[in-house]
Image 1 (cartoon, helix red, strand yellow):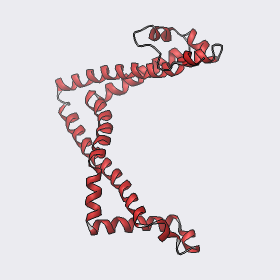
Image 2 (cartoon, rainbow, N blue to C red; image 1 turned 60 degrees about the vertical axis):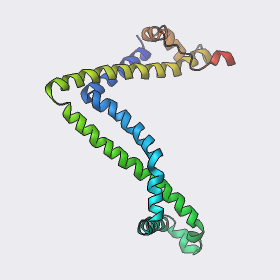
Image 3 (tube, rainbow, N blue to C red; image 1 turned 120 degrees about the vertical axis):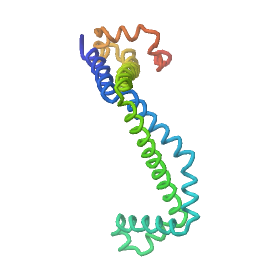
Image 4 (cartoon, rainbow, N blue to C red; image 1 turned 45 degrees about the horizontal axis):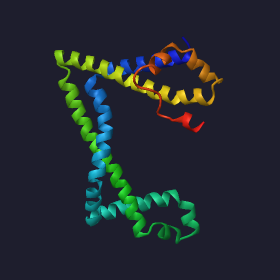
Length: 198
């Protein structure tokens, strides 16, 4: 066994330990929370933006915050050039910045709400029977995730063996017991068609 074998074992063990301790609900929800937050933000941030733009009090509030931040950031330039800030912060520029803030606000609000749902589900799965199922599910999820991470890492390493056959990594790959096992399974390392370009 060499460093590649130890790397494979380490990746697998870390994922299993982490997801077993977290449980299936938290492990899966951690991934879903990010993806779903991004998806919901993409769908609804323009609603938040439209509401702020069309609500004078909110719009003026955001505008004041943006101007205040830019005054602090570009203090020296504004001191030397009184026209610097008005030229920089045209009405169009302010709207763009408000749009960006709306994206961030919408994302973190959805992530917070999904976080509450995650806590509720985790609480429900603390019941004795469900807790064991949650742990077992976390173990299996961690094992599957660990194997997928290993495949990705090895898929990134395998083209190096083709490009630099005498290199340090190539020799380690040749002497690795576990790399041979993974490369002989149905999931092949042909993500990069390097041979076609050599």
